[in-house]
Image (cartoon, helix red, strand yellow):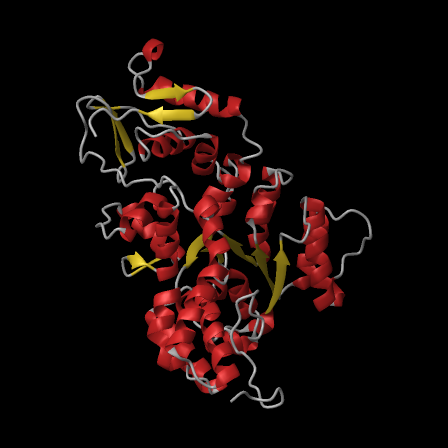
Length: 453
């Protein structure tokens, strides 16, 4: 029996965009507590999470009275400003204008006294008028600013200097600020004011509460299908909401969910998540994470603790297992279709008599059993890229993604890569006239030869 439109309950699940209704926001207690505690002390936080991990939803939650009350944050002395870097902020002038315009909409009395260019002195004057109230600046998709190329290092130094005006920043990015930013920004004092907060999968209790509470609100028996939803979506918020939404739609239509319905939901879920997984596989997994996922798919023990920690932080691994059966099926399907998937390489446990060995914990590099002087950050990142893929070719995209991040793929040319490779060779090759360990595969990329693995 189907319900009439009049009696039909509204689907309470959200997976097509950020959650703005505070009643629809669940979980993230630990992250919210950390952020509010830091704000209480006028400190800044770097929020790090993958696409669809709920970064924007969490930023919206910070601005709600309910969240501030829950975490005993006194908002009367603070002004929250949300800025989305994807909305066309292309240079410092536009950034300042957007900031002060949004601030003036909330507090007209602090509007700037000029209609001309917004320069740093104007920003400082507005913040003086805002005092004793504090400005809390929520910067969504902040990697777009970091990688734009039109924001000089002086801009970030200026932002760092705004701390003296009691300004706190909450940035939302897919990766750490160090990895998102160009080298000149990393060397500025701006990243030093942030503490990292990661958004991965829900905790078990957060997942349980979402299922139980939404079941109660909607009257749908979603709680009875919790284990099936967990198998499909793990505890990754976006995919949990999607799976729950599909179960709810079936129940609302027929007031029951049969075994055939569950199979139909599984296929629908796989179709819906496929483009998300494809984008993740091609763009958001690094050269250590891919073979680690492949190893987990085939039930192998994962010895790469760095990759395991990274995948767990991203929410793609939960309790040592791939978070979703749909992701496992996605990887197996790639294998079945003939795609060559990266295999997990077992690196030597100590310095080798002949070849290159990297001590990750100490950050040391050994060549032919002897430790060499420290490499620069770029040289070390390039070496790790080649080392983690020993005896396999790393192309331009692999190298740019590992050393500068994928957002620089169109801005780092072949000559820049070649110069970095040359500098690395000068540090690790015993004989530059006869390079033995880092070889060029013409037209394809570079390869590190691991003789003892």
